[in-house]
Length: 564
Image (cartoon, rainbow, N blue to C red; front, side, top):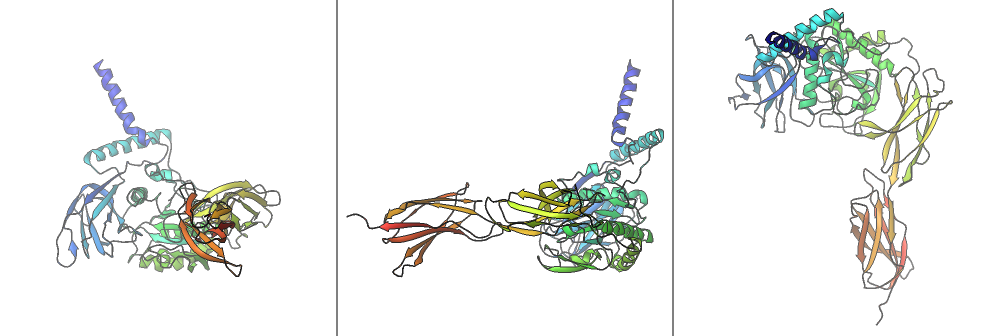
């Protein structure tokens, strides 16, 4: 009986070890995150932390702090074998959040910082993506890796790059462990007008077997430390020419990433794993980047060479203010758009080679891009009047696109949110009624037969609030009377305008009263007219980002003398 129990226990242990690593794909270790507050360190010229031992072995390390202002610095890491890395400059491109982007450490146990000053609230954030954070984790990972290899050999399975039709080989999210970095929200879609090239500020001496863990570590840092929806980059490629799917949503779709502040909705981003400030990217990676962008830009109907002008959406790290037209090369570096050194001086100098190779790989005579139009019968609406939206879709062959799914979307921040759907008719036309309570920027997106998307230009629809006003038609001068009304959609404040008829028989404004509607948009106020005369009441609202100016109808009433 005891032997049977021991056998059952052993089988249970094997099942527990093997469960996360069944051979449906490549082996992926369990990733963990942890943080550490930094000690005071030494003073002198700048600030130096001294050697700091991390809470566990780490593969990725980044910094955050609370102090505003510029902080420059460098970091070096010590491996489990006692070897120190070279000093690596910290990249402070984190948008509005103070801190430095993470670097790859590859199983380090300690680190040292030297910075221009010690910012308040300085913390190190770590990711271990190789299952080696603790001694127990290393034993468990080794057992799971061995079991996975054995089961995979028995099952005859192996990892394969899965990708969209016509695309270069792209390693899918499942192969680098994206289930350990689930997106916080559904993907958002924009347009692809330009491709931005990045670097990840990681070590360059990694092996091809390390790249998947590096992508997982970056994803967990972007999601868990930066608080982003998902990994920021649309694609990542390593020094060996392997290309990885980044942000979720479909490699063949215009997924909005978090890779070029102010331009995410009109671009795609490919990050080169490594640091290329003074070291060149490998020929294999340059060729992989060129192949990827040749396919991706052509897929969305845009050339890989030449220039394009897009509108900046602003942001703290953006080089250009919100609303500024900015001209980019179709394949540009991150530094062209934002205040950063990315993709590194040497890789930036390799962009002409990437453009040249991409141009040679792109279709010699690109097909005419599919077109999508959108229009509205009345661009200025009175709430709750719906927008009558219509348009026309044409395929890449120039013929009407029949039976194509159409999504009408509203602009929300840097992305778009679908509010209505329809299908094109036999002549490629479509039409629908779109309820809207606020002024919006709209666009329509057609789903193409090959799986791509064709977005329309954006149009604006302005909405004026509906304001109603009620009061008695005859009141007594110098005595209060009640005025009621409503504003929909609700506004924080509106103005009651009181005009009195003069001797010239014209109406002259004699008072303006601020009114704050309740949560349901209704308001009640008590008014006193000083003189007997004919009066006009009117409620107005000022324009803002949500609605254009609004006004009620005019209410004419007469104030009479009080009875003696």
